[in-house]
Image (cartoon, rainbow, N blue to C red; front, top):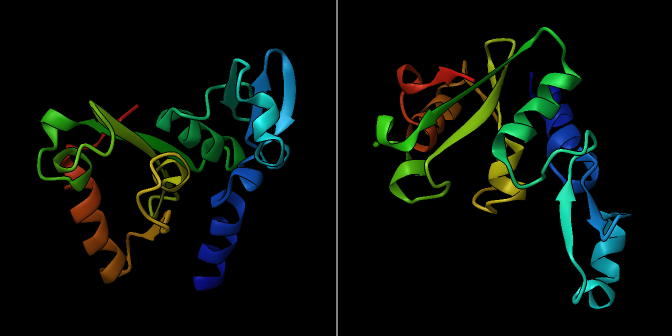
Length: 150
């Protein structure tokens, strides 16, 4: 299963892999080009997008990209911080209000947003059947009983 986790990480672990681009006053610019030309864009209006045009700052939209990659195999779940106060996301205010993420095959928690937007951790894939990963999930995301379908 480690190979599959590495495959998932390669598929969702970078802005480039996720297909993030920037809309700079109507011009589509790749994340790599945006970084290389940052000075050129500093006085312009821009926002980051995912391949479907949705905002690349919204955790739910990242979970949707995972679901789109694995049709019929992904459930998007999340929580409101007040309903999951023991999660590190709530305790540290990593995401105000709450947080959404993807569960693949009822086994893998996939959360690109936590790395790519919040810059909180490098691990974005957790195997819920692995005791070490399950312990990390319990700390970061709280008990699964606090998660609700989105």
